[in-house]
Length: 452
Image 1 (cartoon, rainbow, N blue to C red):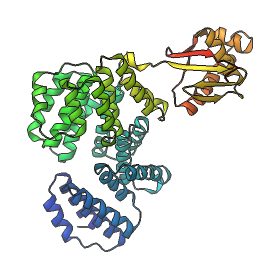
Image 2 (image 1 turned 90 degrees about the vertical axis):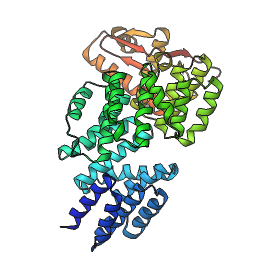
Image 3 (image 1 turned 180 degrees about the vertical axis):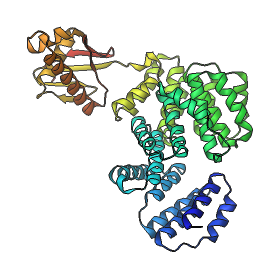
Image 4 (image 1 turned 30 degrees about the vertical axis):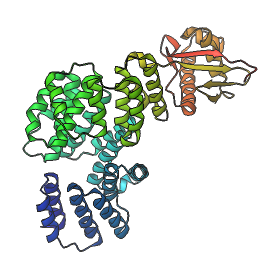
């Protein structure tokens, strides 16, 4: 049996949590080349990690990089250690490094390494609340899946992402494919990930009863941490979709004794033991303890459940501040988790024809080279919805032609893009075949020329 074949067997033992057998098998290996020695050191560190000795595993991986040089697989698993140790500065620096390697050297990586690293990059970007880049990496990984087993691994993550953030027509197709997979050939870890994803899909597409029944069926096979994962993600999903929590769910939630900070806060929300001021204070304390995605999910949930208008407004402003630096798609996805009353905070826009700029949320967008954009904003200030014919007449003193309509669409796109680069806001002007209009929350007025 070759070295690579033995490593495959060891990997399977680790995935099934047969760590003593994996350690024994590693002890019998005799690596010859530098590559084999690096792989051997790497897998010893993976075993250490799965035993819960995360600090030691991190040191072993760093030592492997020092001794054998940079390797994308070791970097990926070093990120896992840093994430679990909440070494967020080191984690984010290495995540950027991993992104760069996967973008710049993807043609140099073998198919399996590329897929596994793209999948892990997607997970970590999702944890960082960067939802659109995460989905991009899941899509890339799916395109690189070379067999049904690899496809399933990616599909579990991609389907879970859609169930959480953007349900679409493909989600039902993913679900059909996933429920038909035989469980007998799956590693224990993959079985848990599959069931977790199915719970979230059923909660989204079918309802809370069906999803809870799945949790009850698989509960005897789960360890304590996996049970908590299933139960609290079910609770967060049910609350975000306005489902009532049955007594059996509350009983299960109360049966856990050791909760992490995310679970503790969620449990207190369910019990109604957080008053408005305490809610905001405790959320502030949670920021250093949680990944950004978990933190934002709690913020959105708290804002949706809060009855105090001032507290809701404060929470929403905090959410908008945290997501403003992300791309427009990611911002839109986070805003979709808010109820309608919170999705559209007023956006005030002040334009100055004399200074040829526009001020939005304290930032100035230079329109000195965007005469059309300035004219269009002036027209929309007077009338927030313009027929396409009106907009063309305003801008070019012409009647409708396909060429003018194309110029109008491109001009609106460029103006939205320019504003997004400076302010981080999504598009503030919408255009279709009939109308050019401001988003409902956008309010435009002419600035005081003396002030500007």
